[in-house]
Length: 252
Image 1 (spheres, one colour):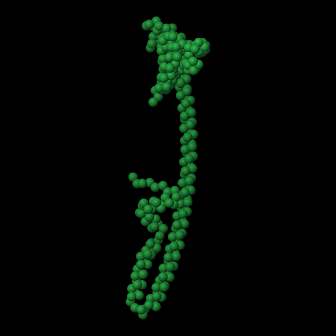
Image 2 (cartoon, one colour):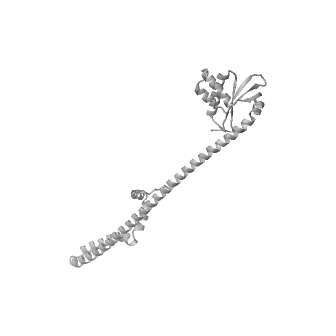
Image 3 (cartoon, rainbow, N blue to C red):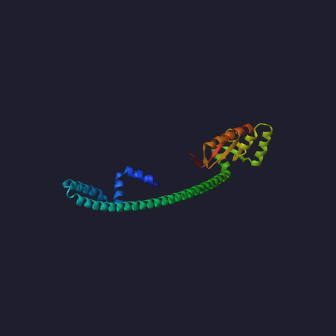
C-alpha cells in the first residue's frame, strides 16, 4: 500500500519532496515553463560558443565581446523574467497552502463537532439503555412476584409458601441489631433482598427460608451478593436459607 502523506505545514511539503523525487520533478514541471527548463542547457551551449570564439582570433575580439554582451543582456533579461515567474509561482503555492491550511482547520473543527455529537449520542444511548434495563428488571420482578410460589413449589417442593413483607422484615432486623446478632451494615445489606420466602420443604418437612435476588442481567457480583445475604439470614433465623438468583441474561 502506498504511504499516505499528511501536509499541514510547508516543512511537511519539503519532507515529502525529499522522499519522493518524482513529486519534485512533477512540481518543477508545473512551476517552470519548457523554455525556462531548457534555459540552463542553452546557457551552457552559449558559453561554449563564446569560448570557441575567444580562441579563434584576437582580431574579432571587440566584435565578439559586443555580441557576448548582447547575449548576456538577453540572458539577464530572461533570467529576470524567470526569477519573476518563479517568485510568482511560489506566491501562488503559498496561497494554495494557506487555503489548504484553512480547509484542514475547518475539517478539524468539523471532526471535533462530529465527535461531540457522537459523544452526546452515546450518552443518550447509554441513558436509554439504562432505562430499558430498569424497565426490563421491573417487568421481571413483577412477573417473579406473581409466580414465585408456583415456581418454588414445582422446582424445590416448597409448600405453605409465604412472601415476607418488607415492613415485617425491617421490624425483625431492627430487633436483631439491638440484640447484636447482626450489625447495622448487615441489616442494611439484607434488607435490600428482592424477596424473602418462608415455607416447608415437601420431602423433609423442614421449615426453610428462600433468599431471592432478581437481576435481568446476572453477573458475578449478583452471585456473591445473594450468597452473602443468605449467610446473614441464617444468623438471624437459625434455619436453612436457600439462595436463588433469577435473571434473563448472563453478563460477560
